[in-house]
Image (cartoon, rainbow over all chains, first blue to last red; front, top):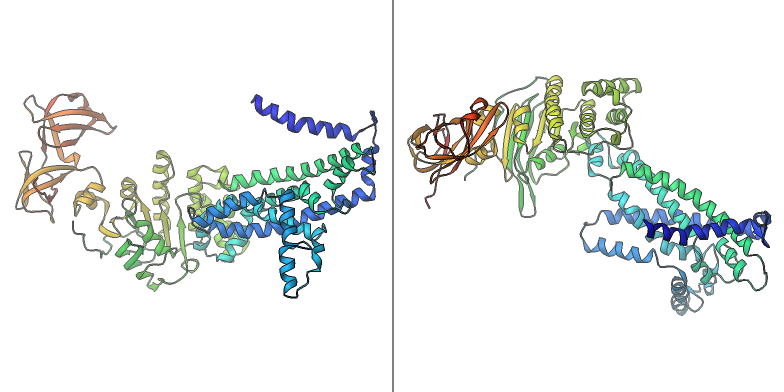
Length: 272
Length: 363
């Protein structure tokens, strides 16, 4: 247990303490000024954008990922297709940051492969500028890792559905649609919402992909926090950044608490 | 070994409230494997028939075809005179209890039992009364508000039985419902299933690989091998008059003793054993003799040596090695345990009960 506690202390507890203490300190003295600064329009706007971006990509990613997970669950358990897809999603779910941003730029950017190819056949895609906007291109890029993550997280739940439940429904007089409405759907619901919340926090805390793709302003909270540490224009706002980080911690903690409650219920229903 | 004819009519009957079930010439293959090979089986109204056999013999496939969960490649399924061969499961009016884990985990025991009644649009009051009656029937009224994960394996299977019976199905299907339970609960629940089945009178098909279970609960037991019925008969008849060595081996313990047939008897271990019909009647044979149909007595000049003695409660078992012959199992009264010990010389002889003999190829 010692290595575990050492790891948790160094990589979780100490950074968390630095954030919490830093959020209430300025110039070496205690203050609530950093917290009050969270009410500034730039910060509230960034928080709102982060929540919208995370919610939209979580919902779309969860729906698409769930459909994909069901399709994969129907494939042969030891078949090549299933192994290939789950392995691929394992990689893609972690495929973020500069690499992913560059892949999209090289494909959909102003001089991207697809943009140029479409231009040669007379289709103008607007110079690929949409790709750099948080509510358009960034959402698409985030979905690139959100959908595979959903598949990985949700697949065990789908595979936990026992064939006997469907067969019992049928012998009791129910149709396939009724099975999904009254049995399969309700059993999967906690797992689905839990996975959706996980996707939300995944997008909410993502930094590198957004930083690589969005260069104009800091429309998202992680970019705002980064700005307080790296900006050469506004200095001395590091502790405001820590207050913003604290706000993110609170949001993520609330979401993860809900996730834990749902996961506990799902694990009682679905013995994986 | 040639298989017995696969058409059988019921020889016993249970209650009179159930319906007749008839499977005729059912065939089902999975690739090159024939899971059902021209299976014909009839269940009389109210009868409980157990299908018994080793893994892969087709007993579960037969039950699933009757349930509509598998489509037969050929043959006909009739329930109460109506052809259900191509009727979807949800319109067959059957109740089914699965091996395990079939309760809906997000519903309480009561909600599980009410589920089928809701699908039949029964009014709330009537539905609740019926569910309560069914839970009472299986002795779980006090557990009605518990979820599946809060119930033991035996309790879950009782709820599953109550759920299946709540809709008053024409036929009850039991797919190895006791196999996931521990020995004591298994015996309790199997007796309870029989009690309830007799009470409600529903025609029932019970699939199991446990011969003791099948013999204990069924009006008739069908022994299956390779998709075919080897024999179907009342438990007593199946045990005492097996039609072939597969049935004799599968149902109960059997000693395979070398002998020589001459007409309707065979010479075995210096005694004559009358032979059952269907036996080989001449030449070298293997005679299938039950442990209780052998006698053993201490004899310093005997032709066998005791290997072990086991006390089994109501009776005991002596295992002896016949000199130059097979190892034999002999059932003796439990009070006789003290008369035998390992290494002791004994004489083993058949008591003269009829037995089946099958032709033996000489080495």
